[in-house]
Image (cartoon, rainbow over all chains, first blue to last red; front, side, top):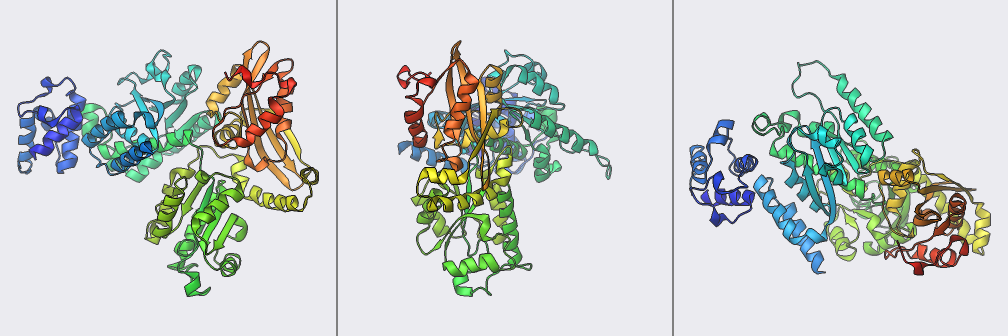
Length: 78
Length: 545
């Protein structure tokens, strides 16, 4: 899951997956704005078949937090 | 060759793209780096009452699949009205402006004041929530008003959002969560559907429709193989499975009625097949509905070449519909210019495959389109006269051709634009203009003329157009000069030129010829009539403008 998650964030931000660290947050990338964040969430929903509420969207603001949110929705880490 | 490989790799990649925003984001980046120069650039602007930015990547990919490099600008959220009335807005740099907002009439008027761009207007759909059973006739009324607006304003087309929302379903169209968090009311699947519909419509504003649908017979127009099952054994009628083929023929007929020429390319016994077409009680299409017929055992690439040459149209104007994957693969390999419809094995999906083909998409229908099938029947009678005539002048005398010309106005503009965009052979410069661009040229002093022709067999319709643009106080440049292939060889080009000369009055006309690789017939006219004639002025050595 982490590999796919990292790839999705990288694709939206237009960077290499290796640049996305577990601690990476929107403040590390100027292009990770609220619109990009929604694109990331929508991509995760399509990729993993899950659903985020508006609150979950705004709280999962780092690779680690997104990972935890997906895990809480029953997606195994690897 | 290298370009072709890049494009076909890229198309395969784009067609296989999974409907996930991140995949589209990566695809757009790949398109920018690899295919930028291979695609036809087109600037798009979106003025929407919602945040339309999430549509952009979908739109770029759907455009690329149709041969375009869309450069998309969205007005900032909440500023679409200001942008439409601010000519300095980047909106006005666009070739195509999309309006997705309630009450678009005023926005169209404001944009038209300073732009000749094509304007695409979303129509209205049913309200998202409604008390059960309460009808909303105001939706239909408002959409009728929009249709009138599009009809009356050159270059305005309607995006049928009402139809799209029916196909998608209101419940899957909207995502209220996204509406509240980001002011985009549509979910990703609906965004993709909207972008696909928009790209298809925008393509149709720029690409003329294909001219001829070439159909197979066995297992296409009827079920079964005539040579094996015999005349009594084929499936065609009012019960399953014959009704499938009957209904397919009804669908094909709607294309004929809109101006698509029909042709047959079948490997069959000629006599036996013609007998079915003429005498089977449940055939919808009869021999006279087909402009060209190739029934024999020769290869189908030969048949398609013969059809194109008989109808005097390019191979790229043909669309091939055949149930056999082997024949389709053969035509793709032998004649890559021909559009080949991917016909599903399931006969129940055949009508949808026909309507799904974008090659025949056409924004506006002209009288010529509706009458085309009968116009081609007249041509066959004329061809008979030509074969019986000893000389060209005998032939022309027998035909008794009559020509009228006039200035392009609101009634003739759509057909003139259509003719300018689809004429390849007798086209002096190959320039393409939209309706609104031609209107703008007329408004700034151009002479734009149409030509209609008829003879003792009947009407040819509006078959010629010319535009001369003012170049200086005493000269006009013949920017555009086109004749439909149906009127070639009748010498009416001289009438169109004479009309242009009359309209130009004391002003000199400077002719121009730009080779396009396909307009050799126009070159002959240029060399013999235009370049050397003092009445129309300058020689080509003065160079094109």
